Length: 137
Image (cartoon, rainbow, N blue to C red; front, side, top):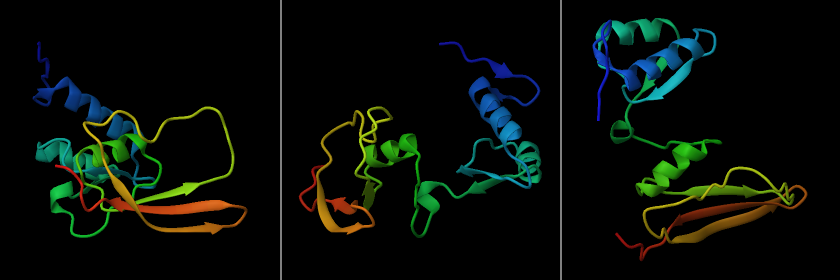
């Protein structure tokens, strides 16, 4: 494996790319949120913050709830690492035929139990799942 360093900032190209994405997408009017640090260089961190990047604490530092709306990649990672205490799903009575799967490949079986459910509007089911008590691992 070859590691290529970005000479002007002293970190690898993957971090450089993350910084470039943040710089391109963030603005003080429309901030971008980063969970945990993407770089340790204080000059780069200050520059990103001035330009609208808001750094949230890392998952181990958060005291409270994290609510994720619509990020399949993040939800999959949280589920795969057993970091989900409650999974709230809204099921709409419409078949679209295409789209991303919420539950892709996982490292192992993730048993859940239905904690609550309700139906609102024109048949929208709200399902609240929790990890099953006899969860393996």
